[in-house]
Length: 441
Image (tube, rainbow, N blue to C red; front, top):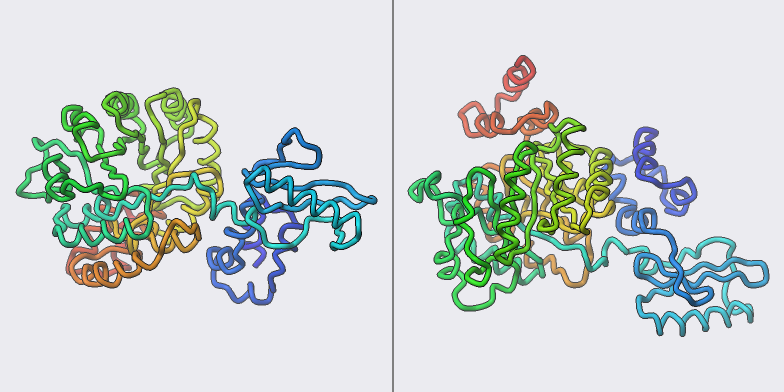
C-alpha cells in the first residue's frame, strides 16, 4: 500500500487532495495494483483534472477568475474565503451566478467554508470535457500489421460504421507504402491506400470521420501522396526513428504544402538516449509544418512516471503550438493508463484501437478510453457492438493482446518481433523457455 501511495503522490497530489477523495483505505488495500487503485477511486476523471490544471487567471472583473476555461467565484466575505466553480464557460452566465452566490453568502443562506466546496462541478471533470481532446482510432492500420492488411471490405466497413456512430475524430485506415517495396500480392489494399481504392470504398459520400494514413520514412515516397484536393485523406502521420527526423520533416513539409494535417510519430522512444531525444525534439519543435508530435511507446515498456517526464519534454520543446499525441502498446498492460496519464499531462491526440487490436500485445482499447473520457460527443455502445460482431470472431484467426512473451520483451526494452514469432509457433505456450532465451541473449 505504501508503494502505491508513493506512486500516487508522485503524480503531483498534495496530502489534502488525497484526504478529499473520501476513499476507504481499507477497500483500497484489497486492490491488486496501481491501475486498479487509481481507477477505482475515480482519481483520474474526478480529481486529476484540478491537480494538473493551470492556475487561476484574472478576467478583469473583481472576484471572477477562470481556470481551464471554467469560471470561478473567489471572494472573501466576513472573513471567510469563498472559492467555488460557477460551472459554466459562458462569461455572462458566470457573472449572473457570481452575483447570486455573493448575495446568498452575505445573507447567510449558503454554507460558509474556509476551503474549496466539495460539490461536484464541471471543473472536476476537465479531462472528460476538454474539447481539444481528440481520439484517433487506428484499428485497421495497426491491426493490419497482424494480417498484412488483408481485412475484408465488410470488416473495414463494420469498423468505419462503429467509429462514425461513436463520434471518433479520426480513423487511421492504413499506410501509404511504396508499391515497389510492397507487392499487392502479399499485402491488402490498406497497405498502400491508393486514392482509387479509397474512393471505391467510401464512394462519393463524406466518410463522416477524418481519414488518417501513416507514412513510414524510407517506405513512402513524396509522390505516393497526392495533393489534398485530390484525396480523401485528411491527416498524414509520418513515422520515423530518432535518426530519421530530418527525412521525416522533409516529408511533413511536403504533405503540409499539399494541404494535409501533419504529424511526426517518433517511434521506439524508450531506446533513445537523453541527448539525442532533446536534440530531436528541438528539431521537430522548430518545424512549423508539423501540426502534431506523437510519443510512441513502440515496445510497450514505459511506465506512467516516464510518460509524465516525456510529456513535459515534448510540450516544452514545441515552438509553434504543436499538439502532442500518445500511441501506446499494451505489452505490460499499461497502454490504457499511459494514454490517460498523457491526456492529464497535456496530450490532446489519443490513439486507440477497438478491443486493443494491434501488433503483438495491441494498443489502448477504444472502448476503455471512451469510458474514461465521458465526453457526451462520444458513444461507447457502437464500439462494444463492434467488439461483439467483429473482434470476437477475429480472435479465432489472429492472436493479439497481452501475453507473457510480450511482457518479457517489453521489460527487456526490446522490439516484440521475437515474441510475435514465438506466439505464431507450435511452442507458443513454452513460456519458461522463451524467458530463458531472451534473458540469456
